[in-house]
Length: 340
Image 1: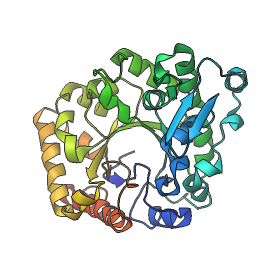
Image 2: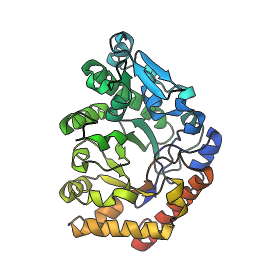
Image 3: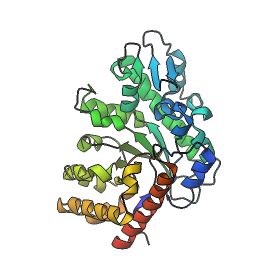
């Protein structure tokens, strides 16, 4: 399909009421609604808890805001039984960690062109959870495999539920830790990252996306089996243009760029305008076309979103961000005469 500046959200919203959050998501300003994560309700709504809550032996410290596991003492029998028997019910999302999702599924979402869900990707999940020595479990071969398989099964369960609401589902793999690739803070190779992400995406019946809200090696990310690349275009749009061959090949095979053009912090949103953001986007498109990337493919294959989740913003500014997102989309459609 042609996306033509459709809009979506990354995940979090700054409300402590799931019904209010959903009312904001489906009021018409966002064309591809996403179920909201609600960090104002506490660490139980953390994306790492939401995706990792079924991992064996974990201790979720809601006060200290961390997840740990004794990798010498957990029992993997139950979770591997569920994985090997393809038991998706084992990976059902508990409502206490997913208040926004459970409000989402109460709504009629059939009229939207698509709907969006999200899980935490295996790199970020594996780096965030620590063993008893303070070491990330991604470096424990056995437990890292469990993390990847859990991400995959959690994704399958979520997709199966979302498909009942709308046949066109997009699932984002949130991977903020991809910014650490090639640094001492993530001692894994680019090839490992690609292999592990692809393993976590295997067998998913939906459009698959990666969201990274910082700078990274986009050529590596585009080697994964994604359909959509979501990135912080407000701060890092120029970095995408450093990989013209990879971006062009991605768009030619039907790939989509999701431009995180609307600021997701109070300070930035208060000083921005939709007019300026639209100008920034146009310049970014011109930079890509100057590198030989087809303009029509860019326009048809573009989604707009905030830079990242809006959960850390003041509620009024988050509302402003939603208005601005819709306004930027309308300006871009009008300028390029698409989607009309």
